[in-house]
Image (cartoon, rainbow, N blue to C red):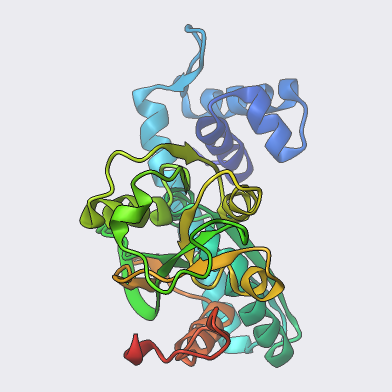
Length: 311
């Protein structure tokens, strides 16, 4: 009995995307063609892999088992490519680096530009999402390495803290608090707070900081992503706690005002993350080396670099 790897990959996409149509869209194939390939795989294995009886398809027990083995097969293939690349050097190749929203938006683009100047033959890409989405991509094998805010505790991942950052409190330039020498946390109790979406590490830190400050009853508005947070604050919809590195240009341009709190939020780690069972390619290892060289973020909101050890 031979296992057709092409049909196996198509079957795995059907399982991952929970439907033939969604998988066909992902694979740029027609839905009947995807269905036919999965049916032929079932015929070759003499078993049913997909339960088609309900409103939504789902893998059978045999299908779940094959999907698990399939992930291991393709992960091994990736490692084989990585091993060959390590022998051939960094003349050509491809790298995809994951980044949680703040890190992926405000740190990784500059790092990737430096990386490309060192290794012009490597094609570089960035996957950006909140922490939950990035971790899912790592675990599924969609990306090999990621840089995220916080320290993931998933046992299948290796984590290494590389930088630190803090949240700061921002308001619109015409807000009554703008320019106040020092604010207590009590002053925020009557303000509307603009918070990140659930699932982001920034939201976890926002909630934790507000709880530590005793600000538990304030009105809240939830939005997705740091850019939306900043636009809401600039429009006067409320104030927010946001990464110090997300507001550098805005504070300089005068579209946001940095509020001075008498008690600063605790620093959070910026962490390099990868799967324990995955061999990194030569291109990925070169990016890891570059990341480890970074001892500060490019610029502090107040205009001067702040060494990690001094925060």
